Length: 271
Image (cartoon, rainbow, N blue to C red):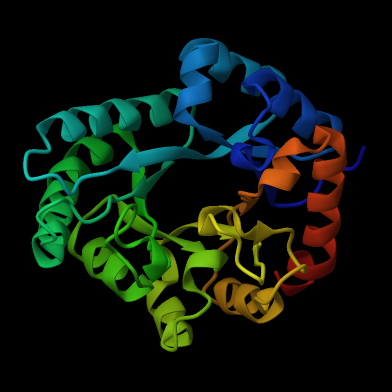
């Protein structure tokens, strides 16, 4: 089967799949890259996963996730992130996606963001030694409380510009709403470490986390967004990452085929 240029299947899109099933599915459908998650990799074994991916002729577009750095005492989180950096290097990917964490019980949003900045500065040294980029993922403001106190691409870029071995993730779901997005994508330029796509579905489900759809099925102008990202010179993989209970329950092959169709129709022409 012909390869699908630059498309990466993020493992979360077929959440029920084991690492082996996800890798085999990509290879079977001509997808040359996969975005992996730490928990299933740990279940399969880090070294076994690296060998499995290599033997299948795939590359790892990113490892998800590091982060959760907003606790007042985040020494344990820093240690875990150093392990995540080493795991990314072992998987031969230079992108560790960072979901930085939400507001803590003290409700000190300013303090939480400062703790993230301090932690990223510290971790960037280890990342640089491992050849890994800490890819900060700004998240839609609806997730500020529990997942990501970096809500805009501008906030993520402020940290990327201050530290070596730090970049940003442009995730369509999280940034499409931003009125300053065009200017911030231009600013992002070489700092873009990963481009992730899906679509924003309405009505929004009770669990907003699961409100993602296939590219082209929702409200995001992915053609325009992709053209802006491509204009920066970004030439890396494009991950399709979908959190959706209905999609998770579907047959893996059907999901992968539908991912490919959405990518071909909506994303690929704009690259």
